[in-house]
Image (cartoon, rainbow, N blue to C red; front, side):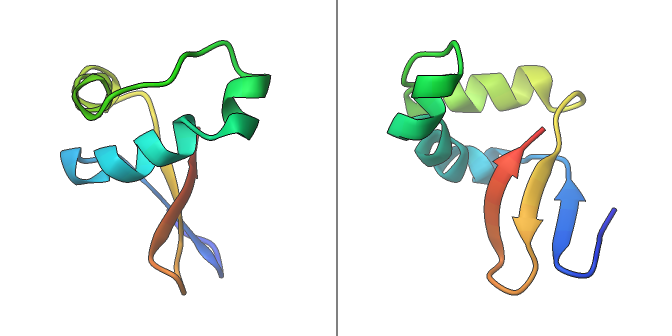
Length: 68
């Protein structure tokens, strides 16, 4: 799926570093009940949940900016 500015897509293992960066930010940790994750934990999470989550990617920047 896509909009004028964003893509909504399934994650791949290649997204693990970016998702880890997002998850480990002070802002995300403050408002979500999660702990900081390692790359290995994020890869396992993506493998386990890949059919249930979508990434939000900014088209112009080609950058993942979030997940739902």
